[in-house]
Length: 177
Image 1 (cartoon, rainbow, N blue to C red):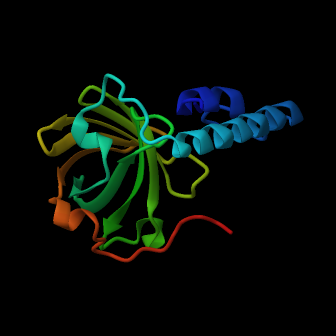
Image 2: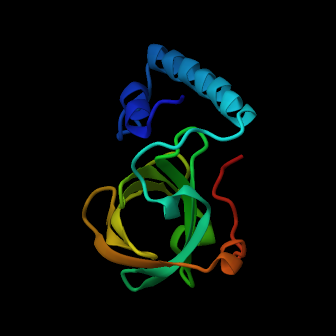
């Protein structure tokens, strides 16, 4: 099983994303190879064993729509294959030039009905933090910028299954080539 996001941060350079030493780079490379091997083994299994924690609704792919402050957002969340109590996904700010229309990546942890995620606009640096609670099919909480200077409330509603596979706004990938 791969290391959690906080464990990887501790090994690979914390939130500062400062230049890494050769030793840190070697360790991160070894950990990445181990995670790939672990992921391959997980894919070969029929299904990972269920863990306690995390609500069932966050155990499968869902689309969410709602408000982040005054902005309309559309979010996609799914469980990570390596860790059923972790989620990954992305979101778009609809009708905004934020991140030039590119998807903003998400990764985080689920404990009971509490969700904590970090976002990255460039796929490398942390650009914000989402902390929320699931109330039925509503995800509600606070978002803050990485520097903590901007804080916004968010309220997202899970979309019906028929809408979950459709993306309303086409988006460019934020991955750099």
